Image (cartoon, rainbow, N blue to C red; front, side, top):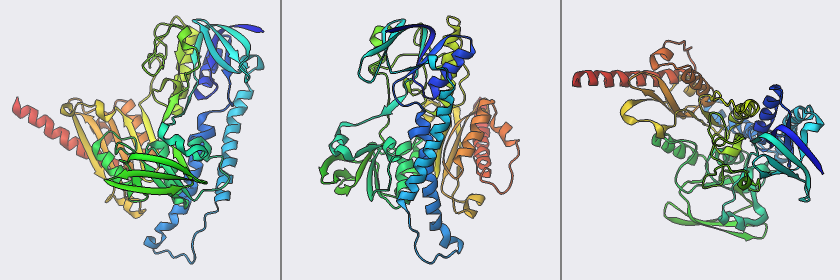
Amino acid sequence: MQHLPVDVAVIGAGTAGLAAYRAAVAAGKRAVIIEGGPFGTTCARVGCMPSKLLIAAAEAAHGIDKWPAFGLRLDGALRVDGRAVMDRVRRERDRFVGFVLEGVEGIPVRDKLIGYARFTGPTTLEVLGATGQVSCTVEFGRAVIATGSSPDLPLPLRAAGDRLIFNDDVFDWHDLPSSVAVFGPGVIGLELGQALHRLGVAVHVFGRSGRVGPFQDPALQDYARRTMAAEFPLHADASDVALTRNGDAVEVRFTSEGQSQTLRVDYVLAATGRTPNVRGLGLEHTGIALDAHGIPLFDRHTLQCGDSLIFIAGDANADLPLLHEAADEGRIAGDNAARWPHVVPGQRRTPIAVVFSDPQMAVVGSPFASLDPSRTVTGAVSFEDQGRSRVMLRNKGLLHVYADIDSGLLLGAEMIGPDAEHIAHLLAWVIQLGQTVDGVLALPFYHPVVEEGLRTALRDAKAQRDVALATRTIAA
């Protein structure tokens, strides 16, 4: 059996793991990367990219619905060729995965260990093959856990049997089904649910708490719920849910808004969140502290687990499970693993998250729930009457920007509306640069563009701040 001494052992070859490995090697350290599953990132295989391929097809199909309002006429009906749609999704998905694999192929063979890692002590681990046999032992100076995450599976949904799928499974379909029940109106559930609906699939989306999308701001929550429910059946407060396998279909019984209902669907899609892949790692042998869910406690700025030799990055730490965050965290963890014991905080960027629904949703900066209402003003704009948005018939949406009363600094924003992905980037940049409301209003805004809506919200925030400061002066 091979025994391998290394400076840094990286567990997981996804976005975070690859970034950590490269950072450690760039620092001149002997590093290995260990992977038991398929190489390639969650984003490329089952996340960001294949979902956007499906969404792009749905947007193209849905665009025809606006033609009559523009005065355009179509003789005959649009026909969605499900097999052709899914063929392109799989083909392009495989192309994106191929780019990732090209990068993996560039890693020296001696640095790639195929198998599942399990800690056997504070500085040792073993690599198990597919049969469970130990193929190699590794003695490391430092280690980086970058094992990613897997879809959650709530117990009530298991009754669907082999008709229960995750978002991972959707992208291997060879044709579109007739009907799907989507559980979880979060990022994945909304994106896939709406896309499938627009491609002609009968979709019902289920939630439990009434929450829809990524928002904490009650006004944005309400707007998102009403907007999505106007397009497809959305049961955001479903209770008493019971599933029964019935032939090649699943019968779903539930209560929503006080009424008992039953429907029959081809598939049940679980979009109820993801869980870090930390079980089976032998973390009990490392001596590091774990939270109530078995996830290592760590410093989000250094990615170090306590004062140990172990770091954790990407989806595995359940902090900000997004590709760009995983890449940053992997680099920080790899750098610090290489430089240990001289561990330093890495740069964490302004948080930004986008839901590629229609209208899009975005959250930027400080979370709404963390803001002090007595020290914060909220600037608002509705996109329903915003000029460019109405011209394009994309005039659904609401934007809230949050600013500090004392300093005028922009703190964060929540938005549902047209081009939210682009406005969110603009806001994230100016927040990270420490800009104030007045400072951003001094920047150029072209006419007519959707970004003029942002200017309106900023002007509202400025007006409210001026009133708050004046009230303070009078009171003093």
